[in-house]
Length: 224
Image 1 (cartoon, rainbow, N blue to C red):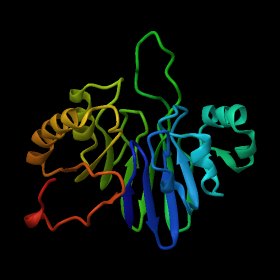
Image 2 (image 1 turned 30 degrees about the vertical axis):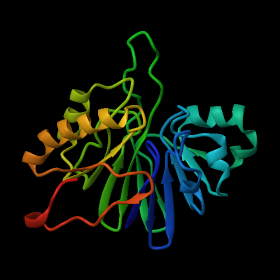
Image 3 (image 1 turned 135 degrees about the vertical axis):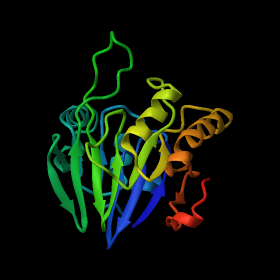
Image 4 (image 1 turned 60 degrees about the vertical axis):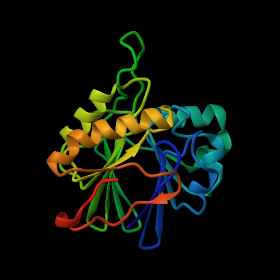
């Protein structure tokens, strides 16, 4: 598995000749989508998808009904490539197995209606990866790698910590990281590491375009 962190909530996963891109939005480098075989979109907010991003590759798009409706309105030329998925569905993209998990965005404010949001749990050559989108609901069972939101208008740092602790993944890669300044992200890194490290949960935050390093053996594992 090769996983590349792109801007904000976007990751690109390559495995055995198949490339899956998740949540390429307005803060994402355009090349993240180039050559993709499948694009997954968790919900309708533009920091998670844009028409221009979806046009970068002639790839099928799997997403929820609210996003499909937005595509029909904003980019009807893309609609024939969109397939609507729902929680509990499973499908395969080459050697990558995908499960649709959960159905609601985190609460932004009690007076706002909660948008729909489906995370994706991927099995990539025996390594399980969970992308929650903008949800603080876990996948319901263990995962090897959590793509962990660390900054958002709808989240405080204690919620980011509690979510990562509840999921309990041995590796945690920061996503949703374009909301804070570099200084504030450093503070978030410190807080998350303070809680995850004693529980032997690795926490990493990578620069845009960086590839997730292979995990170190337990006795040698270090955090960055």
